Amino acid sequence: GDTIEARREQGEEDSAFRGLFNAFELSYIWASARDLLTRRAVMLDHEVFVYPVDITDEQEQALLRNLLARTESLETTPRYYNTILSNCTNELAKAAGFNWAPAYVLTGRSDEYLFRRGIIPGASFAQAHVRFA
Image 1 (cartoon, rainbow, N blue to C red):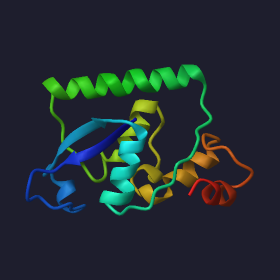
Image 2 (tube, rainbow, N blue to C red; image 1 turned 180 degrees about the vertical axis):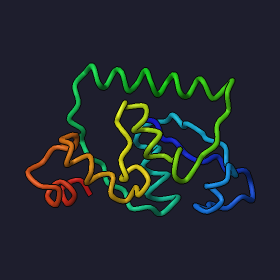
Image 3 (spheres, rainbow, N blue to C red; image 1 turned 45 degrees about the horizontal axis):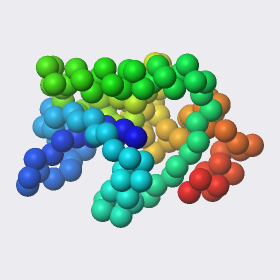
Image 4 (spheres, rainbow, N blue to C red; image 1 turned 90 degrees about the horizontal axis):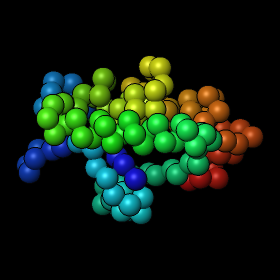
């Protein structure tokens, strides 16, 4: 699994406002899905939804290649986390080759947007949301 986050140093608190002004470096974290979910749900006390995605093998491989390339590029060209332009959601969308959408900034709605695009399967978003909570 992969997650994209602001890399905060010891003593730095999470701040969406400070995230607008290059206060935090951008970090790609690679770990098992279990480790990432445990970190978010238990350590950070975030609500977690795990949705399956309906993408082709080719799309999956392209996403993996793009995530690996973006991760590697940070070694020589550091970048900053930005609450609007380079957050965890829109960095994944960029790696997937998606066009920009408001849901990538207002990230609480990104799952519903992906459902409307047919990437999250289900008869309705409400059913998918409840099923994968």
